[in-house]
Amino acid sequence: MTEQTRIASTFGALKAAGHLAFMPFITAGDPDMAATLDVIRELGSRGVDLIEVGFPYSDPIADGPVIQASYTRALDNGLHVNDIFDGVASLPTADLPPLVAMASYALLFRRGVEEFVKRAVEAGFAGFIIPDLPADEAEEVGKIVRANGADLVQLISPMTPQERALGILKASSGFVYCISVAGTTGVRDDLPPELNEQLNWLRTQTDLPLAVGFGIKGPEQVDILRDAADGVIVGSAIVRLMEGLGEAGASNATVLAEIGAFAESMVQATRKK
Image (tube, rainbow, N blue to C red; front, side, top):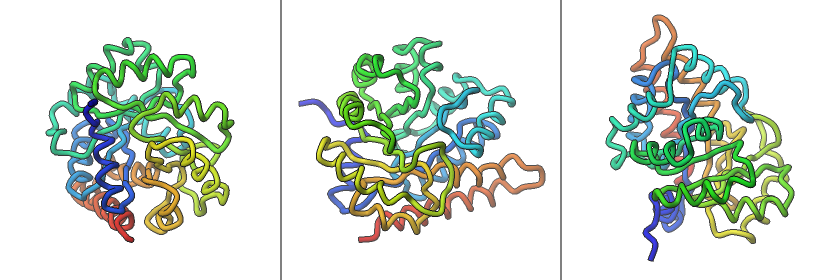
């Protein structure tokens, strides 16, 4: 019997308890890795279920202006991929929620997919989201990821044809990242009404958990997803709070507390019956 991954175990336990998963997204290295590690610790202490860690890239796919700006700041400060690996490796990741690396395929290809995956898993990452992964590479990359005991999470958008979605599901593991709206990431006031229809169809095609991201604003949007999804992902709202960590005269302790309070409000929302 194949041993369950950390991500699969997390979603399994949440489902058994009747809860949704909450996964915040953060940008690695903004403003520096020390701050990033502080944020990961803070989020872990507030009970989040998974943490998505963005690897800054000069030409990000589908990221909105808030996350793009955070990537630019991190790269301008000289961040390298090894800095992320070394920083995460210094954390007690076994005692933290599963960390999921959001990384451009170009970063993996440049380093070598097998080497990148191996190094990331050794550092403590439990899964990978590769938004620009070519369809003809997905199966092979998935094999490499799973051989290292991790999961390859893939994205499905409202514009994904059903035939292509079936191929994406076949190469996915851990959970499916369901993009709630067409376009780029960013906070929105409403979620599109067709989202439930898409999620209901996906339910008939896969047993993988469905996590919804792009445009999730806060706790008030959790209820409309409760019966259709298994998890919610919030990125821009948290990255915007993280901007305060790099501001002159700002108190990092105060900013971390604000991030933690927001995360805790999301956790509480996902625990409601």
